[in-house]
Every structure is written in C-alpha cells, then in structure tokens.
Length: 297
Image (cartoon, rainbow, N blue to C red; front, side, top):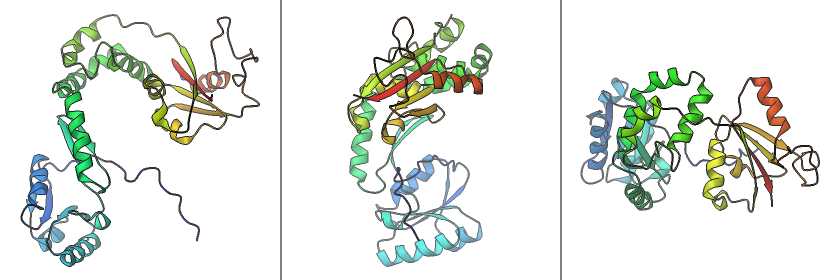
C-alpha cells in the first residue's frame, strides 16, 4: 500500500458552536480548570461523569487526569463512543487541540501549533492583541447588520466581494485595522463607491517561499479573481490566492506573457493581459476585475 502524501496543513481549523450543549471535562486542578473556563465562555454545559456523557451522546471531551495511563484509557473509551477527544498536554492522544484565542467578539482569531508549543501560540496571540483594535468586533457587527443593504446595493456576489475588498483593505474606507471604521459603514454604503475598472497585475516571484512575497504581492493574490501562473510556480505561492479564484497554469513555451518580445498578450499601453483567463471568465460568466500573472524572475 502506497504512503499517503504529507498534508499541507497540520490540522483543519474549525470553529465549533457548543452554546447550550454538554461537554465532558474529566480531571481536576490547574490542567482541567482552563478547559472548564473555555467551555463556559463558549456557552457549553460541563458534565464530569463519563458514563453520563456516553449515555447522553456528548460529542466533545476534555481529559485532564494526572495519571497518564488513565488519560490513555479514557481517550480510547470515549473515542470508541464517538466523541472527539482532547487530552491536555498530550497531542498524540488528541483528535483536536485548543488554540490560543484572541477575542474581538464576534471576530475570533485562533492561533494553534498542533500541540507543539502552547507558549509560542500565546506569544503570537499577544503580538496580534496589540495590532487589532478592540472595535474590530463592532465593525463585524455593523457589516452583519448591513447585509440586506449591501445585497441591494451590489446584487451580484462578485461585485459585493470586490467592493468589500476595496473598502476593507489597508487605507480603504473601512480599513479593518482602523479603530473608527465601524462608524463609517453606513456612510460608505450610502456614498458612491469608486468604479473599479478591470486590472491585470504581473509580477515575478524571486523564491519558492511565500514569505518572500511583498505585502502588496500577497494582497494582490488574496484579492485576485483569476491567477495565471507561467511555468513552475510553487503550490505554496498559489495557495496564497483566494480558494475560489480561477487558476491557470501555462507552460513557458506557450504563454504569450512568457517573454517580453511577445507582444500579442499586451495592449497599446504595454500592460499584461491573460487571454486564457479572459476566455475562461467569459465561458463561466465571470466579470474579472483583478487578474494576477505570476512568473519567475
């Protein structure tokens, strides 16, 4: 039997709603108490009887016994009963781990290391605490409350996304890191949003490491409707694009943008274009406002 490919993600990050649900927490003392507080903050009801949890179909369990063998035995029994199990400080026994949480309710940012280092996750979260304004949650609530108005103003989903991308970006009308942005949501919706003309951005990557992308290049990838990769562009770079963006990979020898001497893919202003992206967008009825063309330097 062939080996499975190594996953790109160490774990699948999910946000699980447990308000009003029962959660099993086994153990006492300083290992168990943080889990109890976490469950209570999320609105869950704590029970501490294993058999009761099995009988009542509880789905999530935290195990914080001092004895390692007791933890292993409980984890096996509860997993066989269909529960997702977290064993404190024993990532090898866990179905899931608990991240360090930055709370800007309803915005939650979870920093996890897959159990490798809770201390590292905490200090990353503390750095983010200094960057993200306390009012970020209010901005989320204002945008949630404005959904009907937003849909009326921008009936097409693509237009809504592009308008929000433009508003929420750094320096935009609703800059996500501006503490006063929540106060401007109504005015932004009532005003005349700038007409976003179609744009094609072309840039060369200098390495296989996505961390070497400039801030602007990373933003373009995250906002692009279509991404055209010329030649061998690493998957790690393409992963920085939106999940729903059109992706096109062209061999160097056949791509009209591969060499500067080929002018068929450039307009009168010598701006790069991507005929394949344009054709595919037309077939799918998509109005691409931002196309990113990637190539190696």
